[in-house]
Length: 230
Image 1 (spheres, rainbow, N blue to C red):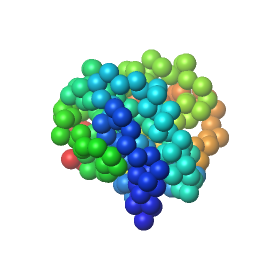
Image 2: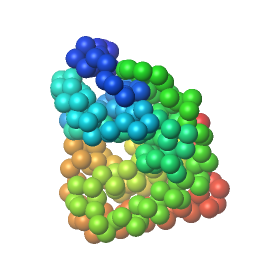
Image 3: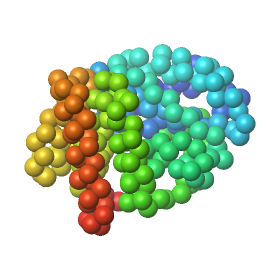
Image 4: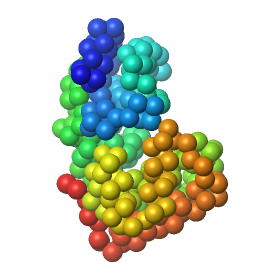
């Protein structure tokens, strides 16, 4: 009912938006592991080629926030991309995780609110290659992150560690996998990440956690020992 209620609200209040090719709901709310006060509500806006993203976002974001308020999300996250870039989002557009590393979850767990489904346009990437690129970017950006983004990055690194050991993106599955591989600190970091994203860890600890787990993930990729759920 949560998903249906949100979609109906958006459709009634928003109506047709020129140059908006598609509006898609995805992530934990569709997947079924949304936690009020902890999770985001995730939308993806696909824009027609040449459309002005600022004007479209300004038009639709307030409605998305209003219709999502009853869910008590941490944030209403609205990603966007131009339609032609979806044929290769890794190189033509912005390499969102849900279009690249976690693309399989997006393919399965999404609902089209307006417009056309775009999943058929997406290329299927080799995960080992795109993971290495993302991990390198994570390390390069680490020193410049503020405290909030450092906390989020640590939690997402723990999730990626579980993912390469065969976990899906469901929060309980991530925790169970981290426990199975025996990484106590990854469990603690991810549990704190889920607890309203409030972490009582020193910044230097979080940086070292990210660095060390990134190296573990890279090693598994280089060894060809990924256990990905397909």
